[in-house]
Length: 241
Image 1 (cartoon, rainbow, N blue to C red):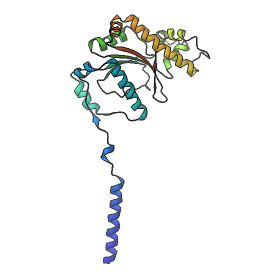
Image 2: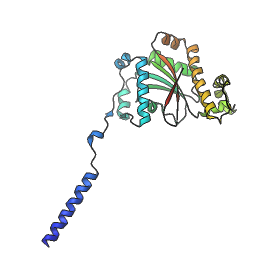
Image 3: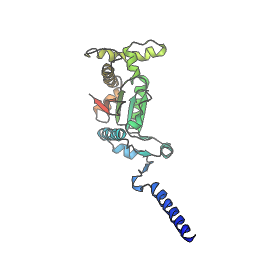
Image 4: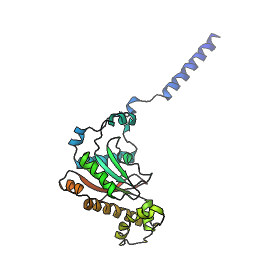
């Protein structure tokens, strides 16, 4: 009987040891949780080129799945008294384009303006002027994206309620793209991309023409205005000139 009890206790101890080892997690693999938010002093020290480089590095982390772990609840409370964003991003409303995540930025880091087809109008221009001239943002980034439904709608000359007037803002990019060698239809992904890129370039041209405030800030080197194309399939960016 004693011998059997000894064997039973020994087996139980061995089982406990195995369970303990199987659930252990090395603490060095845990990433620190960030709750810091931008301050006025930090914003002032930044340059447009430094912010752009930070966005590029952030996108690389997004692609590799190593984005910063953030405590959004704490960031929301800390940023409540005031905001000092680095940049303003004009993006499409597309639900597949998570702007903050694409650049690995947190609460309080960027202004985001969104409209189907990422074009500018008086309201968005005013928002950009507020972001840069009033609130100190130093980078204006216009971001088009792969498989954009608004671009396809403009190519197809869709007529439907207020969508008709909205798509008219994108039509200049379609006209700019008639030099494309290939099928000029919304079913041709390469043509859709070509129009999307021209739409970003046209939007940047409109910002410079219709906002003397932003144009002057750019000429003085206070801000940088940049265009980019975002690939949904792999999260990569293509910068446009």
